[in-house]
Length: 227
Image 1 (cartoon, rainbow, N blue to C red):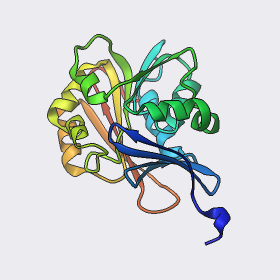
Image 2 (tube, rainbow, N blue to C red):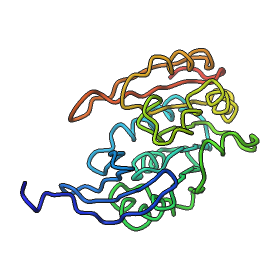
Image 3 (tube, rainbow, N blue to C red):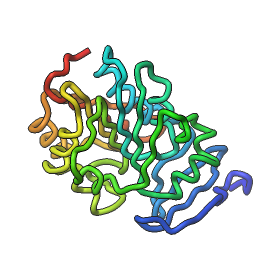
Image 4 (cartoon, rainbow, N blue to C red):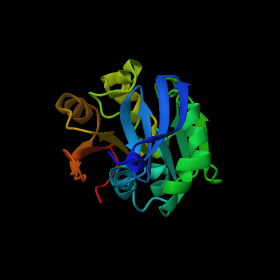
């Protein structure tokens, strides 16, 4: 391998779910968790698509509030910031290092800056956050904290995709609100639970440059009119 194309480690930290590594590879920044690739700044189309899907489902609403569960490298935040009618974005990110990297490296590359005045970033575990009292509700909730319901970063995250987790997400939506969930593959059991809880559910495949398509799930709370 050409030495210039080998991954170059930028930062290595102990995170809440284990070791986190930020590295540069072929001109893109990558985040690796316990040796497993999570995301990079090379594309971001499916992450942007996750947010666009939720916002298209709530088009026409004014002063929309968006909850992003998972900051990643900032693509989903960039999409929310660019959308019209979005006035408040709450980002829940469990890893302090990911937040710091957004301010210094990844946010510059993707355009998803948490220091935008419309953004409130909470360093918190999204499972614990959703299990708490429902103090605010959102027009759109976008869940992207794992590689999918069947491939979680932390064992505790499995709760998010259970009946109880979906009920909590449902309770944090306004009437007619939309939930979107990112997955690296189709998760049939999760989709069945989603259909049992929500008024309308769609599964969309998102082609990627290599490998199987990413899968985006859209679920609407009753009261939403399909666009």
